[in-house]
Image (cartoon, rainbow, N blue to C red; front, top):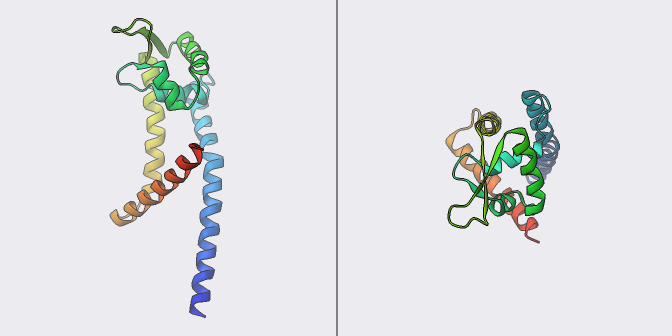
Length: 157
């Protein structure tokens, strides 16, 4: 009887985990998009915000590096960069070492978007970890690592 009760609890826990993951996957990007739309009055799409995030605030990155980060082609990235340059969020640079290589970086306005987007993610992590003990945080980190491995294996196929 005790085993049956434990199995029933596990089944309910697994159902809850599944339903919560589905809800999160379905809603995080939507909530993020609404947040960005409110912040920028519809001037930037989520794709553009994620492109800005992929460019980052460090050294200028090559188009190939950014495209690889986003899992898109350089041609697709070129369209996105053209739009970000027109809107004043990014700039193109020729490599000092090899003038054939085009690098991209963020303008001051682009960096502002980057930091606002990073704050959204930091707030999300803070909300997720609120009230967790150190051992709870270790478990959560392991759970997310397991999920990341699963996704990475599926992505590589």
